[in-house]
Amino acid sequence: MLKFLKGKQKVYVYKKEGSSLVMDKDGYVNNGFYPDLTGQLKIDANGGEEGRGEGVGAPESPGGWKDVIRKEIHEKRPSPSGRSLVKEDIFESDKRIGVLGNGDFGRALAGRLAQAGYSPVIGSRDPTKFSSLTPAGVELSSYEVACQADILVVAIPQPYYHTLPAELLKGKILIDCSNRSTVKRQSAQSQAEYLAKLYPESTVVKGFNVLSAYALENGGLQGSKQVFIAGDSIAAKSRVSDIIRGCGFTPVDLGALTAARTIEDIPVSVFPSWRLPFLIHLLIFIFFYAWSFAKFQICWPLTWSDSFLWELWNHIPMDNVNKTLAVHALNTLALCYLPGVIAGWIQIVRGTKYSRFPNWLDKWLKMRKQLGLLMLFSASIHACLSLAYMSPAYQDTLWAPPTEILVNKVTKDWTTGEKAIQMNETIKVLSSEKMDWQGECFLMAGVFGFFLVVLLGISSLPGVTQTLSWKEFAYIQSGLGWTSMLFLMAHDMFFGWKYINGPSCYIPSSFQYALYVPGLTVVLKAPLVIPPLSWHLDKIRGGYERGSKAKMDSSNVTLTKATLPTPETA
Image 1 (cartoon, one colour):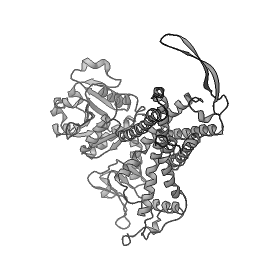
Image 2 (tube, one colour; image 1 turned 60 degrees about the horizontal axis):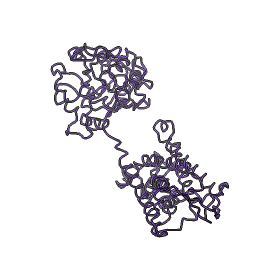
Image 3 (spheres, one colour; image 1 turned 180 degrees about the vertical axis):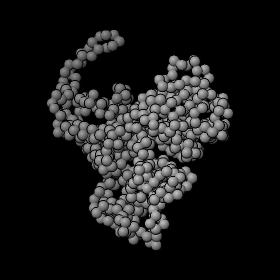
């Protein structure tokens, strides 16, 4: 914060605000910069007594606070290519880093530190035994030598923490990079908290545990570049963050050391955000498949034949699965857009966007990406299977009707090998003509809809999302998403329009119940995109509240500074 005090005398003040240093007018924002961790640092712009103690002058003077901030931002920004920092940019006390443990991870981390310009030393109980595995630029020595560094990386399993030399760890910063071997936590405290309890005279920071030895050796090119840290000392976390940035990664501070419990859950978690969407996806498929099986393999033989028609069971592996996937994929796509429509209606009814959605809707909104990618999986299998057996034998609706002729049919008894001739048997000759208009529209609607869904899936990948602006991303996910659903609904209707209202065994046609959820979604969405309701919803999402005295700026649907509610009217 910048303040002007004492008349003509300018006094510049650094004020710590959370984890950021904010300078008015100049526009600098530097997270993680702590010029004074104890309170405020005042610098006299005219060289007064208040500024001499820190050696920082006026903003534009050589060595002024603007230069300090520019240098800090330059030094602390992460290296995008994994390029190491210049050795002169590293604090002298932090150049030498001890790594306690010479396992795969300890060696990989030491090697990465050496590439980044540090002087790591691996502490081992038997240095001569592992000398051939030591990376270039890394010193291999005893625990006593490694513990001479101010910052020590504890790269040994948690059961061996008690074997560390307690006397040598006093006053040191310990970076705990361990992970537990079980998915569920066996204790209420994290391993980092346990380490801090064992060595109370040391400062423990949790970090580097979300990286693998492979990611360290490859500079994070094959994994996330974020490194989560936690600790009770701001100064210690600042120094550890510098090391993480120097290695080409991005530190993410989650707070106090108790947050290490969350950090330690990350590497051992198995698709936590995918479990519920996958379960819903699987249950929807099982429901539709059971319905199809009851109709095709049980009801039809009992209704239309004296025998059980066991030959229909030949279609269980592929034909039943493919028909189920068609219904399943279309309904799952609708489930990706239905929660957004429900959220829009809730905002209209409440007249504000500043209210929390119901918990079930909030969870539903958060799983849309997973449901969409699972839908793409089902649609891809359906597309491959459909093209694999695209013939009049399976899709006779798309071609001209087959011709019936009378022929003498030869049959063979597989038990005796004897052949018999059956006179004047009726057989069907499948059409050799091209598809009719209905078949071509069915196929083109499906192809367009499928590849639009593929585009949605590609755009949701993090690497692609980062290259898109918010407007571009919203256009693809919303505009093209709704277009794909309309194409796929047309794909269903072109194929089964003649059967769509023809139930059998008191079960609706699959072409009909495939449209229940998508049709409901479209019906609920239509009023939200048609004026005047669409205008009202845009105003609400722009900040308008029913009953509020704040006026709207119609040019961009945002509250202007002049019309923000005052404390008296809020």
